[in-house]
Amino acid sequence: MSDHDIERVKTGIPGLDELIEGGFPRGDTILIAGKAGTGKSILATQFIYKGATEYNEPGVFVTLEEPPHLIKRNMIRFGMDLEKLVNEKKISIVDLSPSKEVTPVTIGEYPSFDLSGLEAIILNHVKKLGAKRVVLDTLSILAYKFRSRDILREEFFKLTANITRSGVTLLLTSEIPAQQGGLGVFDIEAFLASGVIVLYNEKISDTSRSRSIEVLKLRGSKHSSRIHSMRITDEGIRVWPGEISPGH
Image (cartoon, rainbow, N blue to C red; front, side, top):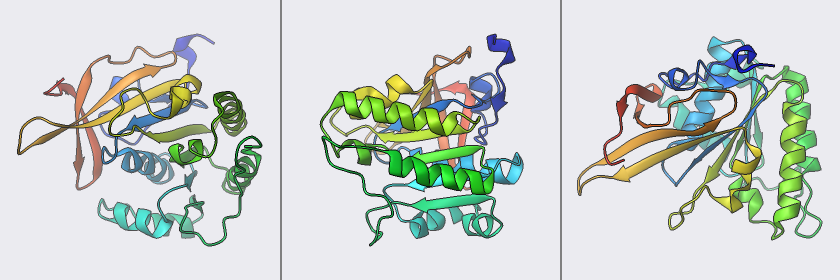
């Protein structure tokens, strides 16, 4: 398949598609990385919401960190009613957050680390909804469970390959620790993903910060290699393709 034949999935983030030749390649795994507070979860949730409401693509949002009621509350501020979509069976929110008293999947400690339980749950939801989009927010949680890079890489590879096999587009979020450069957990998600997008929220003076977005890589795409301005508006995340971010 040549790069021109790649089917594109609209992101639902105004301005972002213009930077990446029209959208994410269908069936790819895209990593959304950034430090705390950069908007990773908002972007990932917006991808699921807009998929269901504007592009007829049902979605599964798997939360490993924040309980669903908080995600719903956060997104209603942007006019995105996730509860309505859950009731209409257009999206599914899978709660694997620590606040859940009984977690339906046990993630074993090293050395027997295994994501097959997580995979089974996700694929079950994908099948029920006929989902085309899946988000895992956030993978950093899983990566603290074990110490072996090789097992981590192997398990992540199996998980992403099996979720995307049927043409599902998968977004993973990963938190970059405050004191660290690079892309977070062992850089392994970046190694596995065919696309990497990094969000920034940099202090540019004592009184102001600047939000921006960078497409580090994207398979088969002539993407912008510059860092572009991004804002969190009343309607969610918006990217300004023509505007280069100050401070970079």
